[in-house]
Amino acid sequence: MEVELFKRKKLKKTKARKVILEEIKKVKTHPTAYELFNIVKKKLPRVSLGTIYRNLDVMSENGLITKIKTNDSQTHFDGRTEDHYHIQCIECGRIDDVELDILKGIDTIVEERIHYKVLYHTINFYGLCPECLKKRKKQTLKNDLLKTGK
Ligand SMILES: [Zn+2]
Ligand SMILES: [Zn+2]
Image (cartoon, rainbow, N blue to C red; front, side, top):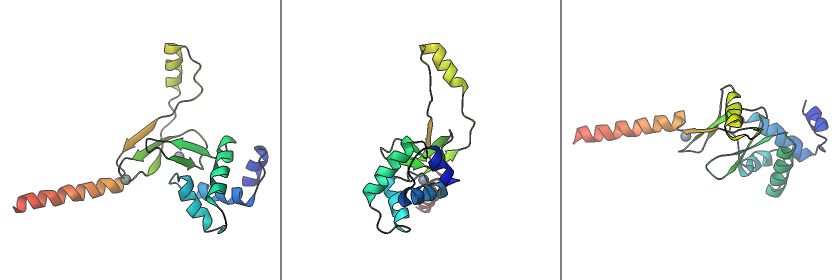
């Protein structure tokens, strides 16, 4: 299936590209180039960070993967290429997919209001992930206990 993908995009399939694509499709964490470098290095010990950067750029330009920009000023990459929304934890920076139908209607609303032809829109949600939420709850509980202990 991946071979097909490369053929369709007329992109030369190199060993590095193949491994990068395989690994990025495996993880759901939306890694940065550096995080991906550490993952890919396990399979290709001689791969350089530069190779990862270059390939991620080429592959996202060709639609094999997607680039996500969030408020943390880091570029994250996604092996899932169909439109979907993301949520990022403001505490640990983790990014997850939001399973929500794409709001097609808002494109039309915007077009009618400002007479642009809308090609796409992006929405990012921000919040606290379940783990950070748990940590916070524990922290508040601790604080409450400390208060009552006094
Ligand atoms: Zn978190
Ligand atoms: Zn995603």
